[in-house]
Image (cartoon, rainbow, N blue to C red; front, side, top):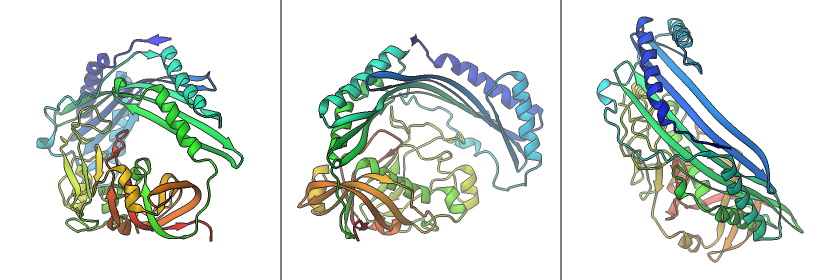
Length: 448
C-alpha cells in the first residue's frame, strides 16, 4: 500500500481554523486567547524474524485552546475542528477560566517578542507512506543483524517509521506561526546468546531527511555488534573510579542539568540549582547551549510555544550559569524575562574540554564505560544521582570485558565539577545533543 501525502496542503486550512478559534474566543468575551493546532500523519511498520508483524497508519488532529479573562486562564482541547465543536470547546475553556484563581503572572508573552518573520529551517522532506518499501527496509535491517554473527539467536524486530507533522500556534496579538516537518527512523533490537546467557541491544537511525539515514544493513550490523559485545558480562568490585558515558547515555546528564535550570523547577523551588544565576557550578570548560535555528535538526524551531522568536543562547558558559530556561509565565514568577523556552529547549548541546573519542579511554585509563542506564534514581531537588548501569570495564585505556548489574552514584553538583573531558562524537539524533562525557570519579557499586 502506498499513500502519497503532503501535509502542506492542510497548512492553510489549519491556519484558518486557528484564526476562527481566536475570533470565537473574542466573541466569548476573552481579554486574550491562544491556540495550538497539530496535525500528524504517519506510518509504522514492524517486522520480526523476516515476517511482517504490524502496520500502523495514523492521522491525528488536535486543538488546545486557552482563554484569558484578565489574569484568569482556562484551557480545553478537542480533536474536532467543526464550528460546533470549536464553539463548545471555547465556551468550556472560558467557563474554566471563570472558576480559576487570578494569577498576576498569567498572560501572553509581549507582542514585540513574537516571531514575525520566521525563517525556513529545512524541516520538511516528505516521502510516500509506502508499506511495501518500509517493510523491505525493516527486513533488510534485521536480516543484516542475523547474518552478522551466529550468536544472534532472536529478534524483537526491525521497525521503520515515516511521519509528517504540521503545528500552528496563534494568539490574540495577531501572531500566527506554523511549522511543517518530517521524521523518518529505522531501528533494530536483537538478542544474542552464549554459554553464559542472553543479552539484548539495539541501534537506530533517525533524521528529518530520509537521504541522511544510515543504510539498513549498517543499522542491523551495528545492532548486532553491540549485542554480541555484551555477552558474558561480569560484575566489578565496589569502589570509586572514573566513569565514561557513551553519547547515548550522556544526553541524560544534559537533560538533568537543563531540567534543574528550567523555570518550572526553579519557581517551585524543586531544583538543586536554585539561585545559581551567574554562579560557577561546573568545570570551567563546560558549555551548555541551544541552537534553535539549525537547519534540518529535530529540535529546530523559529518560535517557542508562547510564539516568542528563538535565538542561540548559552545556559552555562565557562562553567557559569548564564541563563535559565524560561517561558513568559515562569519568567514572571522569577522576575526575569522569557528566554523563549516555553515548551522546552531547542537543540541543546553540551561541550567541554574536547578530545577525540578514542583518546577519552586513554585519559580514563581504568574505569567504567557506561552504555546503558536503567531506572531513574535522580532527585532533582537535592541533585542526588544513583542509577543502574551496564557497559564495559576499561584497563590501560582499552576495553576488557562487558559489565552488568552495577549502580553508579554521585551528586549532580559534583558530577558537573568532575567533568574531565568530552568527546568529538556528539549524537545528533534528537533534541539533546551530547558527546561522550568523562567523569573523574563516581561510586560504582558492584560486588560487595
